[in-house]
Image (tube, rainbow, N blue to C red; front, side, top):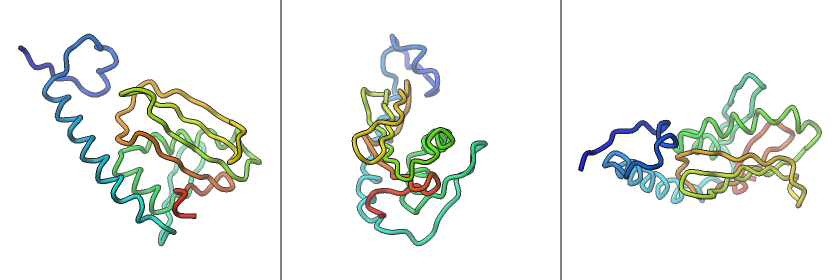
Length: 150
């Protein structure tokens, strides 16, 4: 059997192709990354330093935990997404952002006001984000933190 070499951005275009050796390696790497991140997340309580995440829409201030997720999960796109909605959410002092895996490569992003009122939902058609779900809090449309860092 021939091994196919696919870049991760090509995968949605070829769903009929059998899993290649490279994809198996990617799955193993994602599992290792998921285990590492899951093991380290409980240690983010409070923050020592803040980090700026700049986009054309403005900037988010990230805590140590959010910066860790941005780097280790290679999820800069997720913070871009959160920042891109901030002009629409002006006046919402507290936001809860949740990314949840719907299937192997599909995710759903939901933003609520911290209670039960949904403000934003967006489907992500493809992502290799390693965790099944994660929640961030955004305060005053500027500061993004993990719930454990509050």
